[in-house]
Figure 1 (tube, helix red, strand yellow):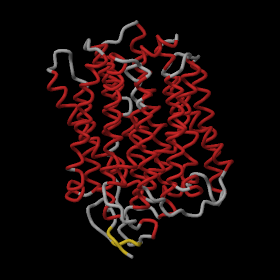
Figure 2 (tube, one colour):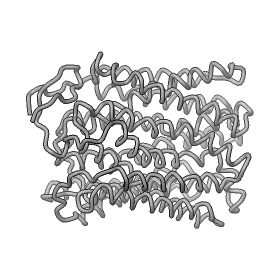
Figure 3 (cartoon, rainbow, N blue to C red):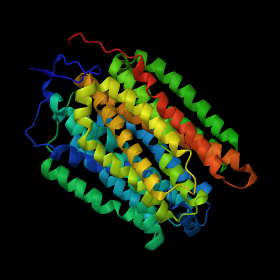
Length: 476
């Protein structure tokens, strides 16, 4: 059969679609909303502890700086386990993998809630990261395989709303629970969400058609795991004076060496764990490069903004979290404009404009002062949330839009792998800069402005990935 696919220039073309992309008869938005539960938990849990670090550190007898190892452990686990997500989905089915990942996530959350030491807490966060590593890429792969391509934009806009809201909901939720209840509850609230997700998947989510799984590339998996965990761990350590700097540099060097070794291995392997040949597809290549730059610029922004509002503006964790949450309202509002926007201006222009406007909006955030009216801050964060939601909806569609069904698993896995690396780099840049500037013992508002300004430049640079991009309009 033939149907209209996504086209970055706004033109439509006819492409052949396999049966794995055919509709299974479930009404939208049921499927994307069920799958979004997994993405919501993964995204929120990565940021919910940002405003709770001092309380957690005091309770388990450590420091806030040392506790940032929990962020690192989470992203290292994702770097290790994400590469096998596509293989597991084809071997055991998307539905089974999603349910298993949610149960693993529950186990990690319970471990965090009962932690009594730094080592225990970091190990529990690692288990959570392992569960999250399977949730996001498998959910995106499942959506691609059960959704007709003409409905992919609408379905993806529903899928991406919860994970876009989650990083902005995390700080106020964490601040509220820490201030008025207890920090343990920021992990306990994951339990009913995960249980609901498992129940909905079991009751309403048929398993998408599987492709032949083949043999798991164990050598490739080991090389990718060492590469990603080394880079994530090394960049995170550079921004945290928990261990000597040479530990971080050694981790980065090991990660780069393992990455080079994997490139050589992938050329020889008939079925590599991450098939880098998908980068030959122009749409995927532009989207992955652009989104990596965008995440490097904005992943640490909820953390930076909440910290600036507390340390620079004198707000408590709950007040800062409420202001940051206004960005989540903007992300929700994007649902009502994203589909007609892409249809009117085309994906290429929409991605360019949203990246440039995201950079501009974040740059304006770098001019905020304690005297700035709260309403103006809310409006700015609302607009920023809306614009970034438009960009990430486009990213989710374009990651698989022009890939074959056989490439889709590798495309979603590679896109998911890039997230922890880019996020770790974002936190390393922001944390390292703040640490360097505050060597005198204080964090001034100007320090936060500079860190946010660098993030704005990185977000805006994502436009260049699409600026010189011209899609191949030849029929497949």
